[in-house]
Length: 409
Ligand SMILES: *Cc1c(COP(=O)(O)O)cnc(C)c1O
Image (cartoon, rainbow, N blue to C red; front, top):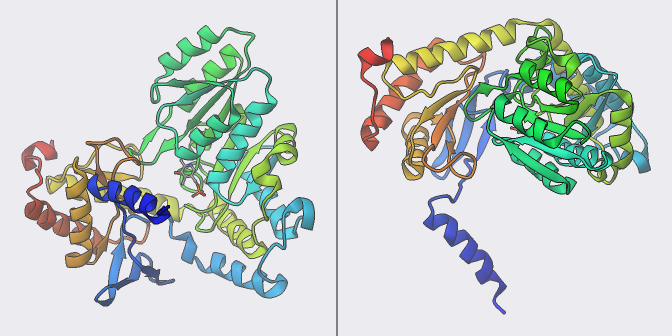
């Protein structure tokens, strides 16, 4: 039996469909974000990163780096095991208290990633609700889809952000059926935002529980960085908020926050929590430092929005096909997987600009794009250079530009 052949065939399929992915070997330079070193096949080069989800550059913030180093030096590196076997370390307890406070909830629970928090969180919650019906947004992240699938209960998909469709499904389920509505607050490929207030209205009216993924919003929206739910004044109406420490907080880990009995039940039943080692103390301290900083400092949030707005304005004025986005995400439409990959390669090789191509299955076929994420540290010069580089790449690949006069309207 030639086992290698199975894997080679699978890889060839990706090559044929132009979906095979190659990762650039990058090394960020703390203190010089968004600059990084690219260890290219032809040697080391300086590049500018335009697609990081370390949205606010907190991964290099002196307070965050300092907390990580100080804790690792003081208590060592690993957590030493699962919390059920090896106990819970103090920085983790402090971090859970910080997160509960961030979301105005009684409790929070940490997982090793946002992915795990959704996968094991959603499935565990739904399994503990008898005869649960899950109502899930059509564009939910893979981690949520996996959580819903593993719950093993009945699920229905409502059209993306379509509250009328959600209401139809809630009515059809009947008042006596337990229902769990699962959605994101900010969808990171299009940069659009869920109508959380209306979703809460419906959940309250029809007696459903709500679970909201705020992964792309925590740290960045709301007066204290509590997310879109905080910004929209509905945080207290959502049963479970889920977030990550790996994006705007610049570290690693995921969590859920909610009422004490909900969190305690997940802690007690979720396999993805019970059977895996806890996050290391240094990571927890670093995340706590990032969250605390962003609870009071608004500079990062304001500058982030300002940079995103300027990037959209400059690219749009240049005639580039910026897709509409209500948030800090700047998607640039390409609509072809091969050209998307080529555009990304040319940007890196000829212009020292790193933007990963976003192809199927991350987005639907025919909607391939470059997903640009400006940070507080992308200055005017970098934005102008980005526009210039994109225009050259667009020209080289024969990609269409908007009429400049139309784009300016
Ligand atoms: C990135 C992401 C996650 C997973 O978070 P990690 O901490 O990176 O595992 C969950 N939900 C959404 C919507 C995401 O984009």
